[in-house]
Length: 71
Figure 1 (cartoon, one colour):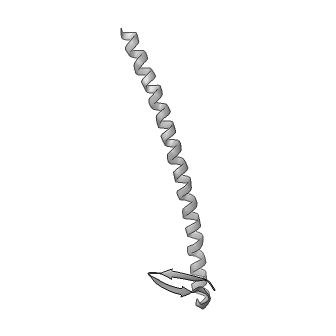
Figure 2 (cartoon, rainbow, N blue to C red):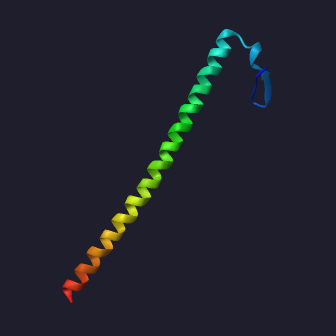
Figure 3 (cartoon, one colour):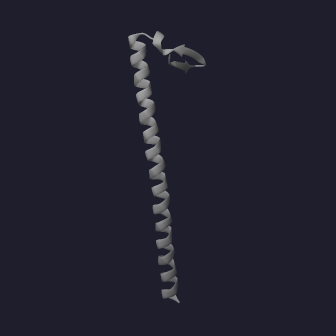
């Protein structure tokens, strides 16, 4: 017997109509897809941070090289 809680009220999923079960299945599918996207975003944010750090390191080399050239 599966149960869900909506707005603080617990429901038995077996008591849902066919339409209610379809809505629940759609909601569960969306929750899974949203979690996947959140995980992808976390990966992209990590990669962005890595690329930004690499870019900053390159920029610092450029600034150092420019400073040495002007001396």
